[in-house]
Image (tube, rainbow, N blue to C red; front, side, top):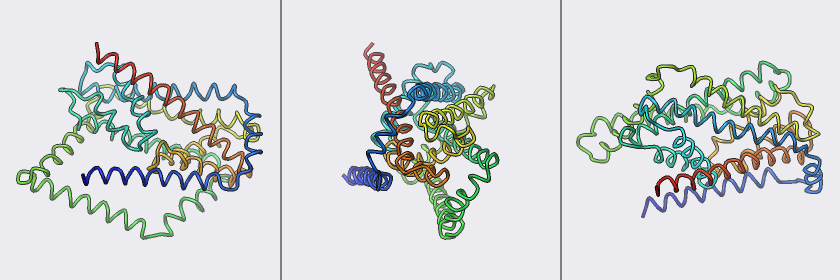
Length: 324
């Protein structure tokens, strides 16, 4: 009962946070100007956006298959593809839940749930690295445009609040202490043994990258994934006349900022993405708040449509496979 109550509260807080961010993203918007901007959108560029979004999912499934092959050489791409799509579909409604669904869908006797989950941790580690490099590239190419914004809105808020840094350090130390206690008494406490087995399995999955005989495809797929993410942003900018003059390096920075929204625990990034992108476009490029929100809405909802269509299709396909 306590666990169910905790989950309900977590989801309610998640949706509440999404609602607050949506409010701030939409506050003060002239909806007539917003709809006028929507009518002037060049939908030819949005077709390219959809294509890039689809290819990003393809490359992500191919990359995950590379991590799973050392654990199960017979793993099929179709199973990995369906699990990835259902994960995206589930995450739209309940943030964070999709990863557990994805791991469960490909788990088998050769690949326990814990080990599969470890491969996903490895994926996320590479994605964070790619996001960091994307941000660095954007800052290097156009420091004059992005430098002041980055320092004022990202660097200073972190460095000027030392309690945040110390909070992170203390959290890491606390986690390390808890893990030491769990492993120290894992043979005496049943719960500790289960947690230790989960962590051990996750570490095995995390180490699957080292077991890959050929790491080049994995690295190329990672590069392709983030190239598609940046391409999606660029195509979205080109679709809106007021933003069509922005360069690919501008798209690099906007894409990096947008991807930070995935860290915020709200359903499907709703509100978080809209707020961050609107603030970035209005602050850096001086466009109206309506145009900033228009781009955020187009990009976010178009991506959500791809996730919904592919997720429903994969779920139905998997149901047919399981019945047969």
